[in-house]
Amino acid sequence: MKKKLAIAGSAVVAVVLLSGFAFRGSHGHGPNPERIKQVLTWKLNDRLDDLDATDAQRESIHAVKDRLFAEGSRLAEEQHATRSEVVSQLESDTPDAQALHALVDARIEAVRAFAHKATDAVLEVHGTLTPEQRKTLASEYKERMGLE
Image (tube, rainbow, N blue to C red; front, side, top):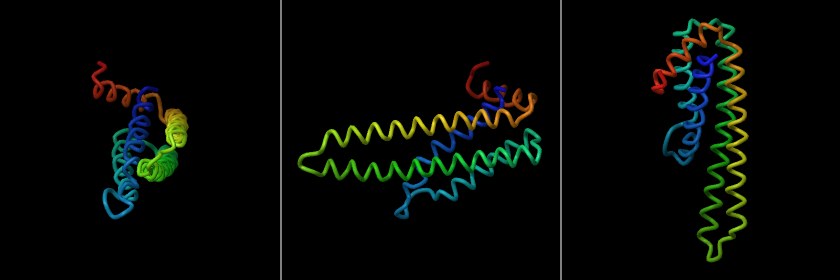
């Protein structure tokens, strides 16, 4: 169980962290979202190879990755729009404090919603893996996190 959580958790963390950078380069600078997705797919495939995942497991887990990546990409796009609005407000002689606070609240709620979707995705992946695969992942995760 912990292994599945570790793999899925790692995938989720990667998607969340990388998706924050995915659209920063929309003006020709920074990483390309498709390239990020490609790298995530390669890394996930390597991990699934290590676990001897079945074709059915791979298909299911990649579907979860694709869904989360799409959600993370939308979150990043929304963040980009929010930054533009913040800059507009701060360029004003009289920034609207209420509007800025509302932007903060909206972003926090969007990240919270994504975190819940990511948690559900982890649980979905967990249900896809065998007990032995989960054990392997948990052991590796604990070692990486210094929990052993």
